[in-house]
Length: 190
Image 1 (tube, rainbow, N blue to C red):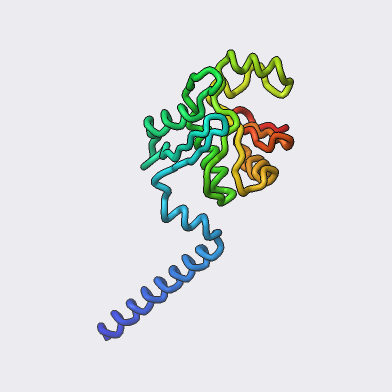
Image 2: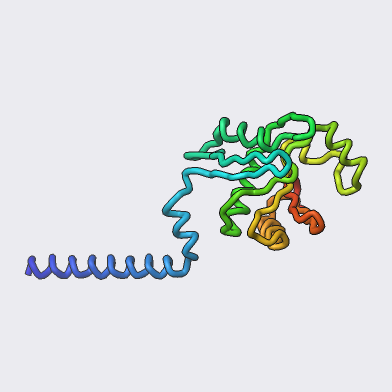
């Protein structure tokens, strides 16, 4: 009788375990695959690749690893994104780099961002604002919080749509010059 009681307890426990497993499987199928993958496999490194269209320089740099920003990577990126007219670099906001990484991940497109404009000195920004009404007098470029890019092999209009879907800052689309402006200011578009 005692042995039978232990067997019944084991069967109940097994049945409970079985039902719990089924619930886990059902939840796993209900959650999108990417969410499960990202929950079980955290990204250790964030890397971006750039090509500066004005200087011809190229760079692939890791700016985040194991939960923290890397000063060396951010400095290297800041130098590549410098104001090429004045030869001056300003610190690029890590949130902008996160935005670029998020955008590239969302469109699942590898390769280099082609940079039209990164950091701008106040003097360069003033000169550009005099030439074009499309240049903001208090541009986020002067704070290292904006970038103008394209992603070769990926339609710039689709890049704009993907950036808008992120709802993470300003998005401008310049079809004649074939680039997208991104910044980490308030959410807006033009």
